[in-house]
Structures are given as C-alpha cells and as structure tokens.
Image (cartoon, rainbow, N blue to C red; front, side, top):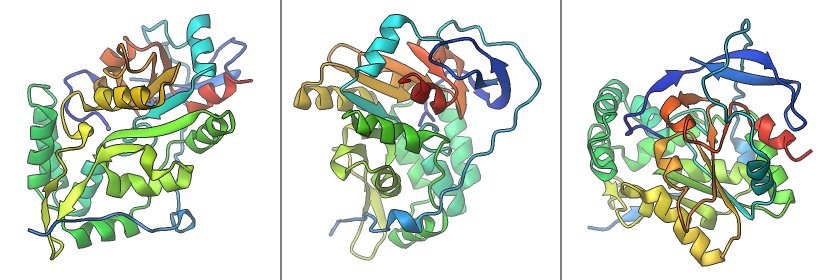
Length: 295
C-alpha cells in the first residue's frame, strides 16, 4: 500500500521481454510505463472466497526500464534463498487493489477519497493524519464492512499463493505488514495459510451499535514509519538471521534498515513506482521470478 508518498507512479502495461538468466524464466513478464468498542474480524472460510485471477496481456516489444537491478546480484540471490523470514506488503503487492480505496468506493465515497489521496501524494501529511482524514470521508460502519467482505472477495496477485506455499515449505516464516485493515487482510491471510499473529496491520474500531469510531492508534502501522518499526519488532522478537521485505512503495523500502530487513525486493507487477524501484535491491514484475530463483 502506498497512497501517501510523493514518488512518481507509473500505471502498468505489460509486454514480454526475453531474458537470459539461470534463475529467471525464458520469458519474464515485464512492465513499463497500494463507549463500548468492539473489533470486527472474519470467520469466512477460504473456500468461500472466490479469487479473481489477474489477466495480463502481452504487448509488443518495448524498451527495458533504466534500472539494472531487475537481475539480482549473487549476494542478493543468496540472501533471498536463505531468508529465515519474508515480510510482504499487502495492497498492490499480495493483492491487486488498494483496500481503503476499494472500501471507500463500495461505500459510495470512492471519488472523494481518491481526490484526497491525490492531494496526500505530496508526502507532506503524516500517515496517521492522512488515514484518519480518508476514513472520515465515509465512516464505514460494521455492517458496511461485513457487506464489503461478502461481496468483494480478495483479488490476489498472480503467483503469490505458489510463492508463499514454497516459502513455507522451505521453513521460511511469512508475515503480512500493511497500512490497511485487519478486517480486510484476515481473509487474505487465511487463503495463504498465514496465522493471524503474523499480521501487522491497522484495526477498524466500532461502537456498540456498529458505528465507526476510529482505528487503533496503538498499531505500529497506523503511524509514519510504522512498517519499519513492525519489521524491527519482528526481528528482535525472533532473532532472524536474514529477513526480506517485499512491497511496492516507499514505506516498504523504509523497512530496509539496521535491525530491520536485510533486503528489499520491489514488486512492480501492479504499480511501478520508479523512485522506489531505483533504490531496491531487486525489482521483479512477476512473482514467478522469485519462485524460479529457487530452482
């Protein structure tokens, strides 16, 4: 999720570019130019969530981007293969959509939230202030959130299920770290087999009548720099020797710091944020590239 950072964002169009590499497929998809309080969770079975597969149509050959980090160095590849833990951003990474924008649209305030988000893209507004302002534009009730979860199942990015399954088979612990909301991330985690305790995200709060009253400000991801804080907490608690962060935005990139992530992989398969990609250790446009790197 990356709605509040002023880096340039390029909408994605796809084409196929032949690459020669021992760890990438022959054709790798490339792209060019996220009172009485009660908490709501979800008890939906993964089987009841109909996933909507993304369709990517190849276009004619086009130039590669200006980055030389689309092919990982030997050191980056070794660190990735030996990671003890991998932390994923959710919106525009694990999922194809930005959760809060989708919820706002469902509640009839999509345009207003999108316009406010556009103003917030300057990055001059602290995350917690911007989050509160966006929510105040539509104040989602408990019943609206439940209805949204029922009618709008998660749209997972192509290849993410297989990648998470492979990581778990390799005894790599997987986490979801998001500025979005647990109510909307719980179904995603359930599908991927990620336990609730491995979710770091915000929590919508509701009153005794189901009215929206705010969000839990104690969550680290409710504040600026929250993802980096969450990753540092994870590492300190478990003592991981090698930890990787995967996401699309600047707040994900921030997690690569001493005591946090050793490696940042920019997933640009949904949103290609050039300023973020330029600073990544590895840029991928398809989760298949990460899967094939283990072969």
